[in-house]
Image 1 (cartoon, rainbow, N blue to C red):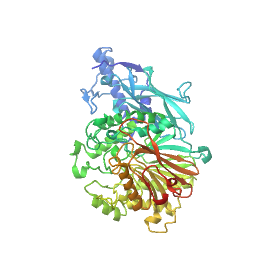
Image 2: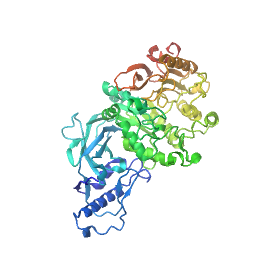
Image 3: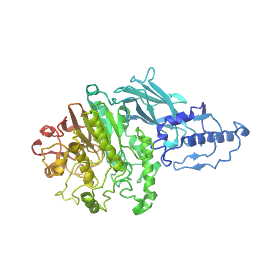
Length: 623
């Protein structure tokens, strides 16, 4: 074992543990998810005592006996751990070299603060049972020079995969900041300089908020190709923030869904992931992609998860192949509840997002008030409390439920009630727009006639029609306009106008209870009518779908990519970008479509897309 290098430090200890939010996320109140800081602190002190006694650097008597000491035990990450009682108010930290292995990231900004993130891996990792200490500082200068706006220290350890997530406070609204981490024991060892942007305050007038620009992503699957889409806005400096709608990773082993052998992108570990160690390893591998890493470094993110961040077809009590009730814990050797807890822990360790509610370990749904310009409501239509979904063997049953079960829910009652109240509050406070970020396609999409076994995707909102109708009924009854829904998951591009009047067969010219949906394609995951088909065949499928679905204005499934959402007081514009080649890392992209919604109209500006798109199919005549 490498010799343990220690550096004594005054009792910053518990404060420096507490400042690293990953110890408290996703929930300090749930032992299976939170890391008890006092135990990590005590273990660290006891480990040092054990080490010093072995080296005879301190006499044994002053330390006293160790009645609680147990033999070294190996946890699931393979590191030596010691139990025992606290013996001192002092603290020791690791004083060897540190690698900032995954650059930096920022996220979840509000008008006064920003979460900043890094990973500080010690080079003597096998010996470390004391904390790694990192300092951080936030500046207004791009080279991170001068007097910092705020600074501090934070501890990390193998308990949280050496990740560090701190809240930089005392910041000004709508401002750019630059931040950097350093090794406390050697200040010359520094992370790359990150950049982050705060949000406007809730009461900021629309003219002061101006136009806000977002890149919207979903579904990056490593073996299918390179994450070129993440590099687009970095090269163009075309956005201010990022919204990620989930499927940040995929859980499969190589070959089960995508084979990355030929392009050197075999997922690690090469198995279907199920444990904390598995999820950490997989996320770390994805985060090594240079375009994803640079996007995180340059832009502040708002992030939610989707099913593959846990496992395929996740719902509140299982996934496609892990369901404790149906299968016990025989699949992958892990109970679903444990697998989900592992995925949630790793997600919170690696994402610069806040813990939304201390007493709710799975809550990621929350609302951000972007001045008087808009509310951004981020939902969880997957993992929080949704009813059983299409698990491939129950498709007919789920189809029957979707058509008949009035209580069926995607969100669960608590989230659904909160969501409607949030929409009402947005109107009451005078916000111009209500933007809803969620995982799955909202609009009705009938595939009948394509030769598929399914007429609808019952894993999307089509499988929860009563919930969709309640949402539309609420905005209809309360005259809530300017609602824009953002969707991911489907690996294809869609623009819908979803309307209660059409659902209920009412006057179709009535745009009350109507919203516009922008659904984006994947970063790399394939569409069933996309990458595996010739371009002209994919276009024919899109033409069929827009003809068969009157609420569907644009369909495109061939290209991978992303879209940019530009929000102003007058309109919301969605510019879609396509990546022709993801089998090599490159900067090629083109704009495949552009759609605008004028404030107060609740519909896409006519003709849709200006009557012309560079890929896919529009409603006849540009509708």
